[in-house]
Length: 439
Ligand code: HAM
Image (tube, rainbow, N blue to C red):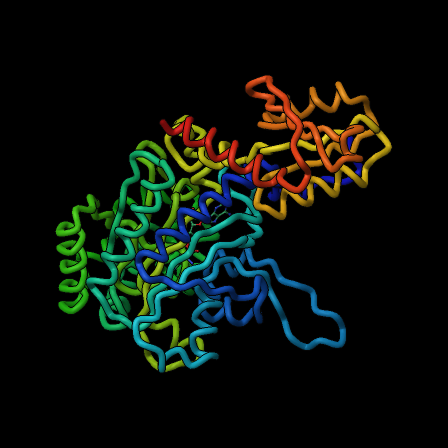
């Protein structure tokens, strides 16, 4: 047993996984660039009130899952690690007066989020999200743009069979009436309603709809549906979002029970699933409209919409689908760069010479590694071949004349090259080889 382990619910991304996440980030960066979303970084911790007010006090995320940071005695502020980036981005929008920028402000970020949840497959206490937000446009066209962008990410990351579920959860005009109807319904369920849910009922009836308690499944199946209670403005907005999605050729299904777990949502709500995987823990991503959030953060009434896609779950699904071969996963592994050259030496003590020559090669843009071991030349050459290096640069007696042996490990040939020409020679051969591969 090792003395220390990564905390429960977290995991180390070893090079293969970390490379894959970098590749997800590349796909996301390239996509959001094309769609005109600009990167933003907000702190991984904020005043706890940003989340309490933004996400809602009576949500699992705030009530049970917020990682609160114990303040030092001389700090009055209560902080928490971010469980999601939207509240922090909304805080930044207000703080930096982004309302004076051209609207909508299209923003994107990728990074770790923290939720003190019970760990299980696909549910971690530290997980990664690719997040996109468009703030300042009431929709409905931007809603469709965002949902389509989400599906495009999955396609480019190599995930097959992603389904889009959409719903409208109304706004301040129609939701209160719906909540009354819902409250009446749950009250009528009586004893069958689990005690914890009964306790929440008085505070936030909507949260019962996405309860994780299995006893709630049959109860919720018969509950009144928000879509039957939408006001005209919300109905029209929802119909227009769907019409835009159809026009863009984005298949989607209306799911009346989809309410999302965070309080800031209004109107459009959506989630991404892979067919056959269902249930709350299996959502690959989700998002929606939050027309009241900026005001909650102290700004003027400003509409917004966005999504967060769970990258850990994308990686899991790619593994399950075994589709790394066609997706970002495989590219990440391939991209682990093989050295163009490994610098070895007949004199095991000459670490300075090996480092100098490798440094010179790297300065000319090549991938070069110095073998700094004290082992025999033959062993150094074997290791270079095992690494898949194209060349071995062998330092020996010829160094006195400013020359080294350049061994082509692929062709099995060797020749003397002037040290001054080494970068150019290796570069040319590597380039020729790549063209040969392509042809
Ligand atoms: P969310 O539905 O809470 O939404 O999270 C989005 C996605 O993050 C989930 O669908 C899931 O893939 C992933 N995720 C959530 N919790 C975990 C966990 N414990 N372990 C692994 N993956 C997880 C939001 O966070 C909103 N901020 C999305 C949004 C952006 N809405 C508007 N803008």
